[in-house]
Length: 324
Image 1 (cartoon, rainbow, N blue to C red):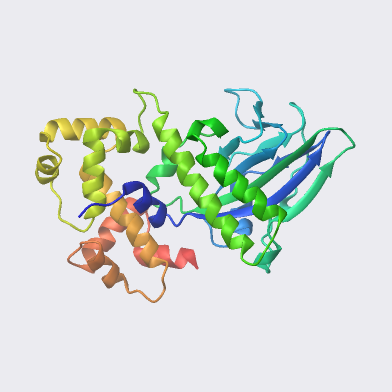
Image 2 (image 1 turned 90 degrees about the vertical axis):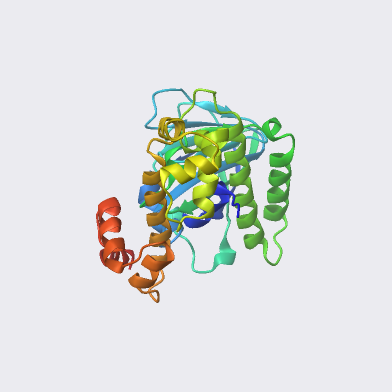
């Protein structure tokens, strides 16, 4: 049995995309986004984390992270996509160096989902005309999201980076926002999720050879094989010996390479991954803790509860209570 580890993670952390703002702006204009932690629950009720993105479909603009001193403002051209994986506050504007007061109320999801995306016209009387589609990806950040942990604070993808695939997403999204028809919101949300997957794949392809992190591990031939095996059979009683044999490597080589790239030994990774699967199942109030324990490979509820509390810091029942 084989599996796609990236798809597996995206499903287990409950990635969900939404298009929130359809912005047409004339210079001068500026919009400031608050930290995602302040608005995640407003954007998607119950969401642990929100990743914001901006797609420039016409014109150009500038973006800068307020909390990031590593680089200055970045110019986004038509066809560019900017993603802020860790939810840093940031500014999008017609010129670098501009600031504004964040409007938290604007990020409250309307009761009528068909009201999205909010159509905004902003700015002054300048000649420039910029169109930006802005939205969010909500996901679980806890107890274990290896993908999120491996992403940088800022990602910028150019139209040419994907040999036209991102451009197709952008054109489809622009058409849906301009000509809203029945089901447009669902179409836009699914398009945004597809776009996110392509952004992640492009980012993985562009990683430097000395990069570390979960995506670097997924790209590595040996560690990638081991991750595929673990994700294909997470309930199996894996040992390092068996995993190394199936990955066609010695125990020491696999353990060293896996720890170097992913940041922990293979069996520890498996335990953490099992807890993420369990956390997703515990979100369903109709599922008993004993059933979850059995589903992820534990022979007893007590053994599962001990492992869950050791990794997560709370018992399964306390975790479930915290979700409500």
